[in-house]
Every structure is written in structure tokens, then in C-alpha cells.
Image (cartoon, one colour):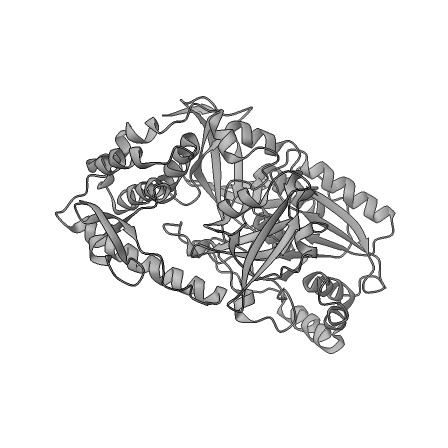
Amino acid sequence: MIRNTPLLLTFVMFLATSPSSFGGDKTDAQYWEETELSLDEVTHSKHYSREECYRTLQTLKGCFDLVNVLAGSAGLQLVPNELLNTDDFKVEHSQKIYGAFTLARLKEPAAAENLSIRDSLEKSRQQMKTLLAALERAFASNAKADFKMAIHDLVPKIPRKVSQPELAAQAINAYLATAMDPHTRIESRQKFEDESRNGDESFAGVGMHLREVRGKVFIGNFIPGGPAGESGLAVGDEISAIDSEKATGVADVVKRARGPIGTTVTITVLRAGEPKSFTIVRRKIEIPNVTAEITEEMSQRFGYVKINSFVDNNLCGRVETAIVQLQRNGARGLILDLRGNGGGFLNQAICVGGLFAGKTTIVQTANLLEDEKMKAGESSVSAVTTLPMVTLIDAGSASASEVVSGALQDHRRSWIVGERSFGKATVQGASMTSRRGVMLWQTVARFYQPSGRTNQLVGILPDIEAPIRPMATDDERAAFREEDLPYVLPKLGTPWVQPRQDEVSKINSCVLANRKAENAYARSPETADYQKLVAQEVLLCTGAGY
């Protein structure tokens, strides 16, 4: 299926946690229907033969995950025999045994566990360890499973309503994410091109960001101006049903929450274990990729720039325009908000970094396909501002966001405020495949900060830590990061040591003594952005605005 033909103008260098979530009016199923992909790619591929599946432990896990995508569409699951009828795999009906595995229909859990997000994450990690251990033993056993036979047995069981091109893509991506690495995948070329034009997003829906832990879907935050934020739903609510039908993952919730403008959707959540339902009228949600404004919440004029994604061919120019305009409007300091920004194009990250740091090294890359020698990625643009600045990050700030925030931290150009970032320091390159409209993203390089350290697995650590609200609980701060993915690249490079410890201590003391951000948040906790308030207070504590 794969042929290494360059995509678009060049071999695209891409940094992101996953395919972009900017869906526009088309669904993933519609994009895949426009390609030549079909389930034949799965049923006829030599990659999933018994010999190939047992080539390494990773390929075994990849085949196992692929089969479970197909099985899941039919309400079934492939389970290691040794885990049958354990707490997480209670069997209702066994269908067929394949070596060390059994295809079965599992029982519904007797009652939903009222676990916190943090506990759900920890349980997910433990389940992953248990499953990987079982797969290791299956790999070493003589009972080799015929995954090809399992695939052929499952295809007739797939419901007709399921989009076969989309299911094929999901199955192939499940294999690639383990057999290769978590960021290798196929994608619809048309979807990629649609999303790359300007990064802006527009859709009809309710306006909320979601996160998934152990199959449970939680509300991460709300899109400003969207109806979800006005409905009574709350950050941290677990979504259990959409229109009275069980929610089965983020993709399922997103698909069913969207719909024609003016129609209604009922979202049922669990809050403190109790179900609550909210009926919401869908409306058009518009999310510009770059937003800029003057904020005066601390009685000083600070410029605020929010970047949602680096998947935007015009991003650097748009950010430059925003900075110039904010300075004309009297900004005395700048806040660059990269929270929730999962990454995008490497060239745009280098350019944006240069807007603040100037013509200097923004990132270093090591090509994994060649000699792995370090190559400096230097900005060719001059800095357009010398204003003091703060950069906001959180667990959703990944890859290209970590390139920018790490460079600004290394060059001592910006204070980093918020929470530890995602921890992805790999670069993906794109090629076309032999199937029309299908492109392949492969991990081709690692990246390092200018100082030689890496954020792989460890993330970018903030200079000044600020949770989503004062006194946030461990559960509220729990988040899925790169280290929670199987078969990620290990961390390498120089460990980071805070080079400005004395200055950081003084800023923290100033923030704690004055409590301006905390007091401002207390006046309107329902609408206030505590981390943004802390960013402004940090600027004040460093003398900005005076």
C-alpha cells in the first residue's frame, strides 16, 4: 500500500499529538469515503499474517489492537485467554479461540465505577501493564494465533451502517500506533489539506473540548460563546450518554453532539456519581486559530495572543500581525497562550519562535532515518517585539507548542506559566500511499530544545506553576500525557535544570504575597481564567506595565 512519494510541495514536517480535531462540516467517515481505502487493505495485507504478527512483541500488539477495532464494531473483543473472566474481561459468550486468544462478547459492567479522573488514569495504566504482560507471555508461547483468520471471521459480522473505509483506517491506525509508534498513522489527504489552509474551525455543535480516560469521556473546557458553557454543564463532568444512548468514546460524543443549527441534543453526565441531563440547542461554533486582545484585568494593558493549532500555513504571519497591532494599542507586556495546542507544522513553530526570540536557534532535530546528527532549526525572521512576556502551557500543549515554549524558556525570552506540557518530542513526515487520497505520517526525527535537553516524556516544566484554579485537587490536575502511551520513544538528552532559580523564587514570593490573581478569580470563579490571571500577575511582579 505504501509508496514513498513526496506529498504536496515537500516532505511535510509535522509535530502534533494526533490528527487535528478541526473537522469543519465533513465527518471523518465522509473524508475516508472519498479515498480508495477499503477493508480489502486489512483482509488482504501480508502485514497481518501469523508470521508478521509474531515478528516482534510490538507487531503482535499491533495485530491484537487491529483485530479489536474490527471486533469492537461488532460488539466483540479479543482477549488473552489468561485474562478471561478477570475483573475487566467478564465473558458473556465465547465465540472462537485463536491460539492464546479468545474472541468473546463481554458482559456489561454491573455498575459504573465512580472513579475520579486521576484514579481512572491510574487504573488505565495498571490495566495496560497487565495486558502487556499477558501479550508478552502470548508472544513467548507456542499457541500462535491466526490473526488473519480472526479478521476474515469478523468482517461478515460488521454492521452495514458502519463506514468500511473509516473502519479500515481506524484498524490500520491501531496497528501502526503500536507496531511502529503512537504517532505513525494514515490520514485522508483532503482532510489534511482542508485543515491546513488557515487553522480556523467552524462547525455546528455545542462547543466543548473533551478528554478520554479509560473509555470514559470528560469535559475538559468550553469554547467561549458556545451553548455548552451556558447550559449548566461543568468542567470535569463525565459524559455518560447522548440523547439517552450510551457514550462510547470521544469520537462518538463529537459525532453525535454535532448536528444542524437549531436542533437539540441532550447530554447526560455523571457528577459526583449522580446523573444529570442537559438539553442544548446547537448553534454555529466559530473558532479562529489566532485570537488577540488587550486585557486589563490587572489594571495594566497587556496583549494576549491565543494560538489553537500550528496546523496553519499562514500562522506566523497572522501572529506577527496580532503582535504589531497589540503594540500599537498600547500593550505593556505579552501573554502567548499555547494551552491545549496539540502542535502542527515545524516550520511555523520555528517562525513563531523567531517573532519573539529573533534570528536564533529555536529547535534542534535528529533525523532517525539517517545519521541522527543534530541539525539546528534557526529562525530567519527578526523579533517583532521586545516586550516582557509570559507563555501559558498545560498538559494539552504538545510538540510544536513545546518547541516554541522550550525555546523561549531556554533563551530566557519568556516566563513559562501553567502546568507541565504533554511531552512529545518527535517529528512526523508525510508521504503519499498507493491508494488515492491516503497519506502516511511516519516518525522521522526527534527534536531537542536549543540547550540540548528534550521534552520527550518529561514535557516542558513551567517556571511558575499554576493549576486551573487555586487549590485545584489532584483529580482536577490529572491529565493524559505522552508517557501514558505504549511504545513511545524514550527520553534522551540533557536533563533540564532551572537556570533562573533566584528570579523564579522572587516571582513566586511576589505572587503569593499579593494574591492579585487569586483575589480576581474569587470574584468570578465561574468565568475567570485563573492561569491567565496568574500570567498577568507574573508580568506585574517582573515590573511590566510600570
